[in-house]
Image (cartoon, rainbow, N blue to C red; front, side):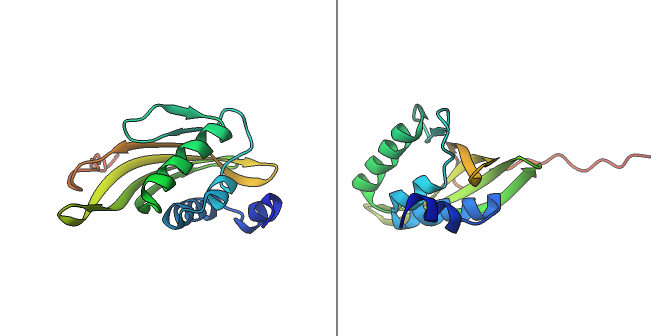
Amino acid sequence: MSKARQHAALGGTPDDIEAAFYEALQSADIEKLMACWAEEDDIVCIHPGGPRVVGAGAIRAAFDAMFAHGGAIQARPENIRRVDSLASAVHHVLEKVEVLTPEGPAKAYVLATNVYHKTAQGWRMVAHHASAGSDGEALEIQQAAQVLH
């Protein structure tokens, strides 16, 4: 599939791009994954404990290495919090990641922020910043709602 057709197939909302991004991770599809990203020089990706990876070439190489090392990445977004506007969207996501350990399957949690911009090609990811979570407990702290009189 051509890059232009992949872009068109992604859909028209930040949610569509987010779904395509996680589907690409789960299938280790580098072309589909890269089609989610904007065509800008300063797009950025930060993996847990890793450096800031800037630019499409560097991001592609980072994901290529991840796919070559462990294959598909079984990360599923949960508890998505959205701040959307006309031309940008920020999604705060709890990623549930299934990993195979010597003791068998286990799950890990990653806290991620995905930033999307509306570009000439439609909505595209411009930043993915992931940080290691804990065992799944206390991954979100909320302020109690205040009643104003």
